[in-house]
Structures are given as C-alpha cells and as structure tokens.
Picture 1: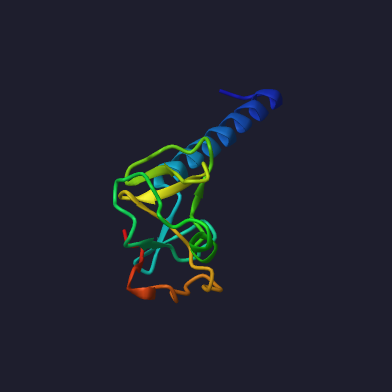
Picture 2: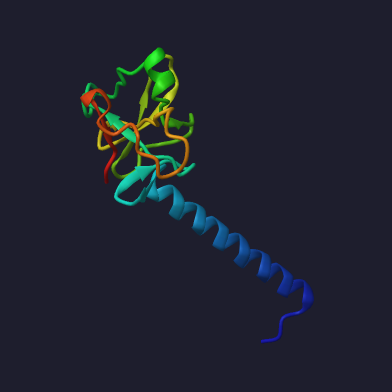
Length: 131
C-alpha cells in the first residue's frame, strides 16, 4: 500500500506521539527515583536518604523546619500518585513528599554533586535510601 504525502506525515506524527506517550508511561511507572550504585537518587542524580525517626508507613515526616533545610524532602507534585513501592505523604506544611516503602525520602544539603554520600550515618539516624 502506497501512502500519499499527507497520509505519510499523519502516520509519522501518530507513531512519534505514540512512542512519546509510551516512554512517558514507562518513566511514571518507575517512580520518582532511580537506582545508581545501589542507592536511590533523585531526578537530579543526587543521593537520597531516609531518617530513622520517620515511622515507616505513618504517612508523616518528622523532619520539618530547620531539619528540612538541611535535609530537603524529595517533593512530589499535587498530581503525583503512589506507584509500586513509592507513595506520597503530606508534610506538616501541606506540601507533598515522596516516600519509598513507607519511608519519606530526603536529599542532604551538603552533598555537592551526584554520587556524593556524605549524609550516610549522619548522627546515626540518616541512612542511604536503598532499593
């Protein structure tokens, strides 16, 4: 079957759009974090951590105020929804945060570049987030 130029263009656009939509769905299913060298990292490639004082599955973060300045939460958007091991919790300020297996996820303000893990074991209550 021979496609005319307008039909070929429509077919190309349809296939391109379909591929983009499938790629978007695949990335959404994977969750907000990636795995690099055995630890979870945020979309920016920075290492993610968990806080021992957060109770898994409580839907709460106990790291607020100055704590959240040093340990910025992995924020979720208002439209983000739980998927697989990832859930969304509501922080004390009403903003949304990602959690992995019920534990809220955080960055460490003193990590300067992807791959840094300087927060691991900090005060014996901050741990690398592992898959």
